[in-house]
Length: 400
Picture 1 (cartoon, rainbow, N blue to C red):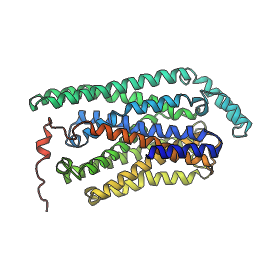
Picture 2 (picture 1 turned 120 degrees about the horizontal axis):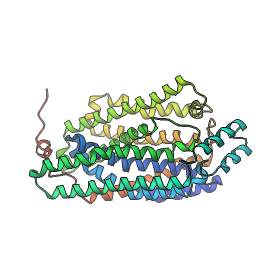
Picture 3 (picture 1 turned 30 degrees about the horizontal axis):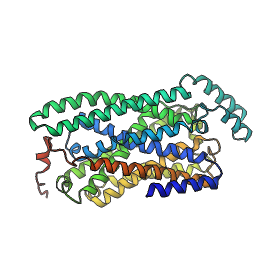
Picture 4 (picture 1 turned 90 degrees about the vertical axis):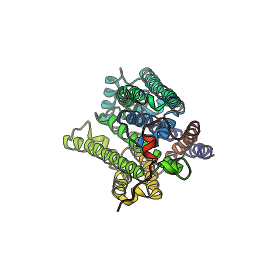
């Protein structure tokens, strides 16, 4: 119902704006956000298989359910393929002429853009977009299918087979993490970074990798805490494990902060004319307000709140922090995407189209959440054939 309501809202906003441009831009935000939930769930699932630990027993089913939503994300990506000529200058060099005619691009910027488009054409073109995307989704789909199928087989076995399954999951997941890191980097280069064809960053993929873990942990904790209102999660989600999940989330908040600041510090200290415009577009022209809020929403608020031991032990408060983190991730994506376009760079201004950044991602995410809940209901919530089950069912000991 929410997806339908906000889809209608998005169409009305496009009519009021008189253009579909902001609808297309907001589609990228929705795609990247839902992609982060789906494939980020696959990433954390593989990480859990490699590292082990009791936290995996609590989050394994939610993470599996997230990864199995990949078909919907694939449909979102297919739709993006029909929007290329309005979003990416490398797909439609006519956008450079359009920006020049409107006075949004100077002659010096025109020369730089045309040089970058020509130089990067072997990689940034419609053909490689489709090829790289299909290869990435094929690999993600394979790992999703294989891990899901192996999980079903493991549930049918006995505890005597535990060592065999642990080794098998470790072997496929270890290499899978490397494959995912590389393919995910390629995907975000095409989908997001190449919106500004002149800019590049060697840490860009890693930023999105950590950002996906940031948002997936938030959603997985929300799911686990909601399920703890009834059995079986009411029994297995003890205070100790809840506290550990809060600390785990805190670690990714710090890592996310470290990488984002590291990228900024390196570019600021280098002060190279081909690098600093990316940040100038996101700081000047009232964008400094959004940048400051992004820092507060995305890092300062969750970092400060998750320092509290009591908060991590309080289900209601921890849920609120995780909800805030998901909102902050969306806000950060808005800051990353919108200033790539010359009408918005260093010029934050009001229009009906700017509201598309609310309507379109909410509609896409609502549909994704519905699909996620369907997948979550399709299997038992607790893995029984796991050596941690007996340990996690033990009552907690009182601590003075």
